[in-house]
Length: 137
Image (cartoon, rainbow, N blue to C red):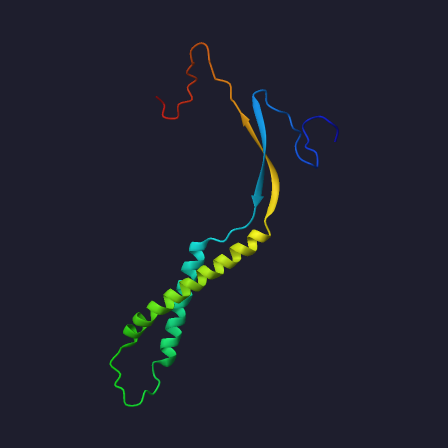
């Protein structure tokens, strides 16, 4: 449509600076960043699940003349200390690698910051009660 001011152009809306607006341009970097906590906790959970699988698969192995005095729970508890720690470390390494990859793919753009000072709202006279109170007071 024409220049009626109501329709934006394909490049964006028409720019009409406010009377009290101050505009500054900054160069910004836009990139994706992994959430390190999610990767560390996820790695720890995968390490615990791997511990469960390994202990349950090796629980009934023939160990010769050794007596089996450990229960499944105590073995899982002991080996999960290693599994959770190694899993959390692997999750942290994966997060760091992804962070480096995303840093290389970062885009630099110019952003415009517009600060507008709002005029003080002054009302002369008294406010009238129009009976719009929902509580009926």
